[in-house]
Image (tube, rainbow, N blue to C red; front, side, top):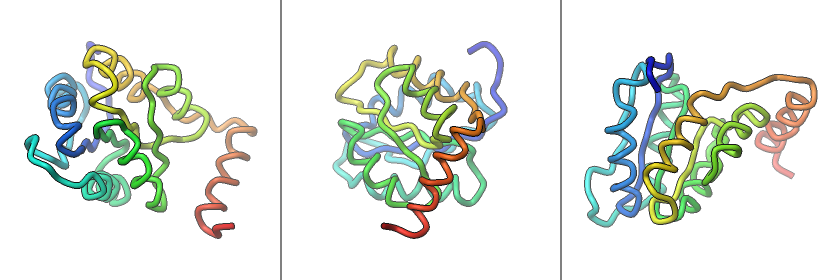
Length: 155
């Protein structure tokens, strides 16, 4: 990325995701309008749901436009984040899913596994996610409306 993206990004993760989260922060700090580090600050054991909540709060309060969460596999943070109304999170370990999830599904949180992928692939995935924008075509909007209804009403 050569120029700054007009995005505010919240990032967080647990101890298993900390090494990769740290590399992502170093790589993308200064390349987005704001990079809000929601922790953790070390590899000391901690609980991934706490960081899913911290990142979600930044997005829902309007202080961040998108979020990135890193745990060991990406699964825990994805499960936790998707319990929070207004958050649409997914594990993406490839660039296609990272941009398609935003473009078609209005995904606002990228989840990755720090023990699953290496830093260079993670950087490419984060870049694809950050560059993507929701495309509210009729079919995408119709499907997203159904997802939001499920979120609101349950089953």
